[in-house]
Picture 1 (tube, one colour):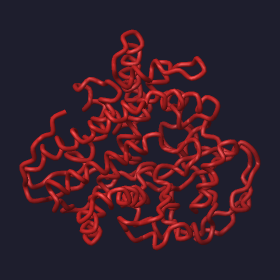
Picture 2 (cartoon, helix red, strand yellow; picture 1 turned 60 degrees about the vertical axis):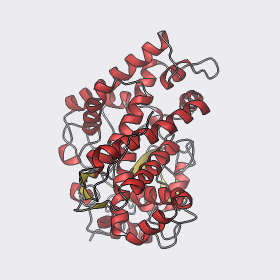
Picture 3 (cartoon, one colour; picture 1 turned 90 degrees about the vertical axis):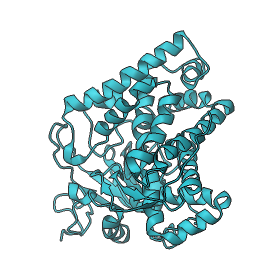
Picture 4 (cartoon, helix red, strand yellow; picture 1 turned 120 degrees about the vertical axis):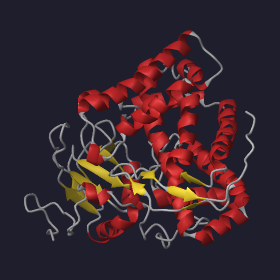
Length: 427
């Protein structure tokens, strides 16, 4: 066991043999980490950790503060003046070239963050949102139709991954023939920590996505169409528009984070309903009234994004613990979403849970997930289509987890169901 105070600085550390920087710690799903985070919440809710060396990445940083309680995660999220995103949102500092392309809105502070987010929001007109909503249903039905007659599938590759990828690519005007390539590039960017790509491979994936998106943005500037990218490229806030490079960074954010998080929420949802058949029965018996709360519970339960980081802009305190200007602060969403202080019986999966103010889309503040409503729509529609056509679909094996402290991902999950013939929906 480690001591409750650092031997070199007097900063509080967690008294446990668990090593949250060990890849094996992130290899088996959230249930295996429950005791660690419970201990953190109960004993040292703001704890200091060193940063390990990662081959091919910058030298280890000075360490970071872990924030594990719901209330403290919300505090950090809702005070962007004290806890900055501009210095990076991953625990580890990224190389300059990577950080530039991965910047997007999540790595910005106001006023730049406000400007870019407002421009993007202007593009999501009611008519554009309605068109996307209709497209979600068409694509979800087609995906279910393609696998329904087989009686078995892999939830990730056959069901959960195609929907958000197709929606995002179509929204952003990416040609169909590039969709699989984009899927491969996002897997490189958000891959296993056991197989962290070398810097050249990582930059290659990022540049591939950036060049595709920038080309589309430049085309829509010159030749506007009735689509989202054209609306984004021509939207203005105080006379300013989105540059093609800013649009490229936004696409990388959507393609990587938006694709991965929705994919994993759907996959975790199938696993949770398999493990909790009583909750499946409740949802299937009344989808019209239960779907909204069930989707929120899936996102809380899955917590697809495990953490985000901030950097203190001044000397401050979190739960009475002094944080110095320039120190890193990591918000553990996975822990906050199981905090007994915020949720009644948080280790119970409950599709009717209310209230459910989870942090699966972030803890509020200016960086609350821009795609939250789209993700909710995709998850809800996919389960509605499954319940209609293959209502007995269930996991038939154990999930293969992504080894990542950032994405609570599942790489593979086999499933079985009674085969069915599913008619496609016309677009």
